View 1 (cartoon, rainbow, N blue to C red):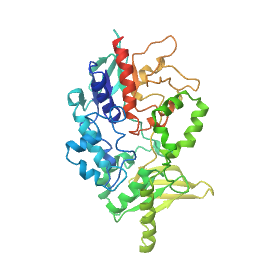
View 2: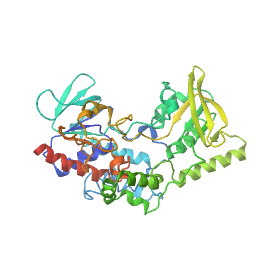
View 3: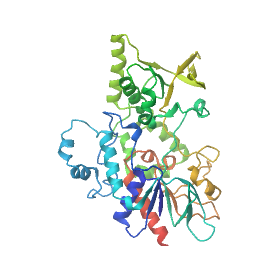
Length: 418
């Protein structure tokens, strides 16, 4: 098996294979040079948004060496962590855990390896993996986990300017922002990431001016109802997978705010308090521009100009900034006419892939990409990319990552043994 990407999804798979099917020979290819998790968003004080026991392994094997609790024990921080009066671990703490778990598999991972495509070999079975340096590798099975591509509003997609970047790169870019006196920053979006960046930038760059552009009226609190939280139960995956396309669409709308376009109440309270305090100080460092769409964007040496339109009154406005930070989430798999039918590196195989009635790729319950009628495909799996078919448990959350890894490990172990 060759795994493409070595973030949390494939780290969980490596653990599952070691504990369940140690006879499967595995190699993981990771484009980054070291194992890191959300390096651009490890903001001071920010936390994860799931129970710490929903880690890389515990829901599948609570006795595993690779649990978050054991990580704390081995780093002699367990009682210090248990003494914290916070509902969720700090993001920095979980990042250390992910790196710690990944380092156990250094002998199975090739860092700094950029995969450019997956195809069928000229002779033999399996799949051929092409690397940027021209090297080609073959494997009986491939598990693809590159993460979802970032989503940009349409007006920003054609703007090839390094001053416009996704929020996941924020900490990588802070030195550039700091080098601009009184930097003008636009933060696009109403997600938790957008609110966190506005708060961090206001403190980190005290002379900056920050404009938060929202399509909605304001921020929405994340739906943490324990009833809606059951979307992260394993049985919901079966329920969602078997539902009709119309039912999936209805469920997505009903459950959206458990994970998207919303923020935790502690972040919202801190943000709203900051805006109130600005009134007391008479210094409006952060401005909310609500109910607004980006109509167009243009780049010049002096900065980026965003043309906006108020969504309900139609009033136009213009915003000149030095940097645009896009906090509008990620792209799910689309139908065959969209821009993300499959991950780009699987494009050579797309003619062999089955289509649903909605012209989306056919994905099995075991996360395997299924072939079209009369065609063959080697065992290829999508790890962490199947929200459209498997529901919110596949939406980048840790909640079901260990059970998804188990399903893939079980399926591919049978496929490579046949």
